[in-house]
Image (cartoon, rainbow, N blue to C red; front, side, top):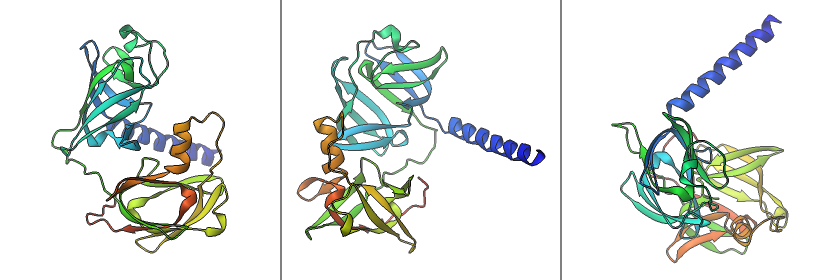
Length: 282
């Protein structure tokens, strides 16, 4: 009994420490709504996460808040998509779209209450806060003074298809992220692409829903698993979501323009080692 109590106490300490760390590093922001009202928001999130899903040149990107200085939204509150202008902390400017899901909520619902659609959430001096994306005009992220500005890593790779075609790709991403989600048995794992030398896809599983892969890290370590490569349309999928899942699992840029490809077409991915390779944990 004492041993179980000790284990439970250690677990509780670890959980409390994790929560405290998440609170310490939570993002803060000033949110300006369409009426010009400013809201100072702590623990600022989008759909419960500290990153935002943006489509730039019709390609999905997951941008962490620590890379963004401010975001300005355009369009009408009831639009399914909002045009967003992004000012990155590095000085780079981006322009894309954010899925807002529409809105019929009045301004008075910005704090408290319930509604539908994509939203920003957090805490203000008045209590819990949320506001629908369609009701936001601008978001100004607050970053610790003197903090070193993080630089977004640009991954470069050579992609070889099952037909033997080669593509030189910059800013390679898997479903908008710089990591590859895979399965080991029933457990979901991920591979940080910045640490990988190459990923080989098993030809024998090219027509299967899940394809076996072997990832080789720069340090020589190998990891095996399977990736989702299904091409059958799922129930409830829109044309866009079906295309993104099947034909745009990998995205990036080539000298000819935007690049996209499905997992069912790939034979091998060979990465170019980043010059400023970091050891950051995902």
